[in-house]
Length: 180
Image 1: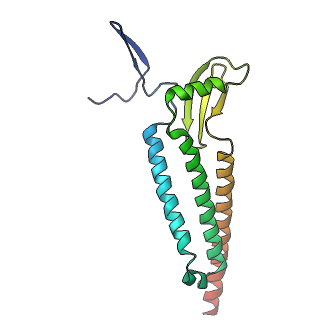
Image 2: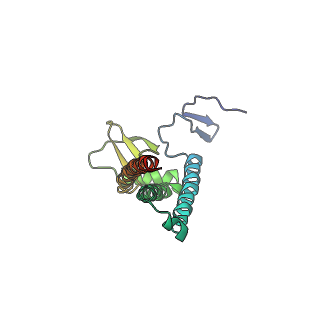
Image 3: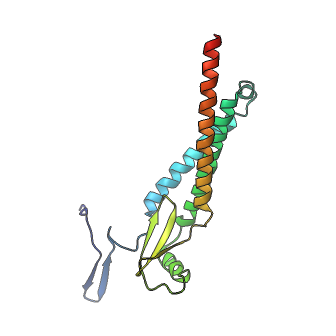
């Protein structure tokens, strides 16, 4: 039986059995396990591909054909691979946590003066698990504080290196066309 597209949290009492239906509008949602697993598998496959490519650039033939634009391109890919590895490390912090353990961490790490908790949400960009308080404030748990800044710096480095590689490649192409 297909489930309707929009749900709400409902409590049903059937005799002595209390049934709780957790739905899509549930305020206590973290990262979806299936979504997290797909992200981890995709990132791991991409990371392995990048590592294999970068290792192939270490062969003697590849080093003989080296140009500055290629070196900058490889540095860009290495930075992107490092960012991806750090992101995967952050995702692994979430993979095996149960709802009960997440709720306990929300309570243990609640800042002083924070009223009752009203929800929890998980974001993939930036990677975080947030506990929401009734006064509108929220705070992040589980994900180490260095993950998102490190990923940001590495991605900026990758982008900068890619721009330098593109400029050097363009200069090389225009000088070789002019000479040939």
